[in-house]
Image (cartoon, rainbow, N blue to C red; front, top):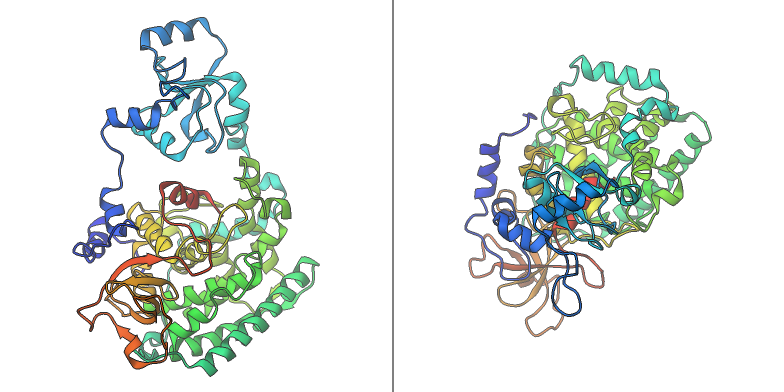
Length: 512
């Protein structure tokens, strides 16, 4: 049930969208999966590798010399060193040109390193480049970083060793001992939210957020705490989830400050629980997943605040500090009683990726606990749609695009993303869309397998006037209403949400 899907099975999901098109404004997720590639090599060189034109419209004075000329210059210049393209830091500007090992100019001086340019160079079969010794210190990661081991930072080596022994021993299976919670979930169709119940949920979120914050503070001061508090939270939310999943999930959106780690973990926990229920977890496993979601990021509180709240891209040493936080969380959870032994394992592995590019151990595939693979997707979605010090929040639709592509490229488990689509739809609940009649609506309920046809509430007519959200004609099942379609995903009104782009996609692969 939880094994990684093959490319062919993922193609089946992608094909669900093959006949669906959005008008200009947002590239559809399936187009990104199938066609978002660079053009021919000659076009790449022209678009990405050539230097920027100067004010006169021509290239700068040191443009695209012949390989013979460049090779002669390199031979005469002993100030060049060889570095890995992967070690070039995105966002840094070269003071001097970049050459390939044969002396061909790749980037002129004063060029900015971007993800697109790095990918283009690598796709040309050039894993290493030649740069000036002066530039090396500014634009690359120090090669000595590769020699740094986690234990060199003073972690509890015995603790991490015990967890790694569990993982290496293959004790990562997941078994349901009871019936699937999904059997008890009530699907409400076009029914609106119970506002009284929703208000109680919001109040409960705030109370739980405060309690979680106090627990973190106590653990940070070395105190022992009772883990039954978070277990009770999970049990309460499980009941709410079976009563009205959509209301429970949307009630937590935008309720907390974006730097409030404890409270933001609740949104991750609830989304993970909903995905797990969709994947047929029983009540015990669903609660374990929710508890792990509530505690998995506690270790971020041990990361220096200046690193946690940096408004610029983190340098390699700062990223290493971020990557230590799962182990900090692991250590903190040793002060929490009454937790299932699987909770620390899940929390420890949330940031691993099934292709082995995650952290803290670079585990892959079946070496990552199934519940951690679910929590990873929920954590990624909430992270993308939250404001970060260095960027605005992404549109919820754009975050879904990113995750679909990540599934295709084997960063996340495709089966988990497929379950997320069933929970949220391609246009996630809570997001805003433009309809084919030019009216504006908010997505209020998922529609199971009808990913592109969610249940929506019209909020504004084609003339720009607000409408009665509670009126029956404005509660619409797009699968039943053949004359209406979503034509464009929209940012949340009053927000500064950003759209999908290559830079945002790749930045989310390296962000915590």
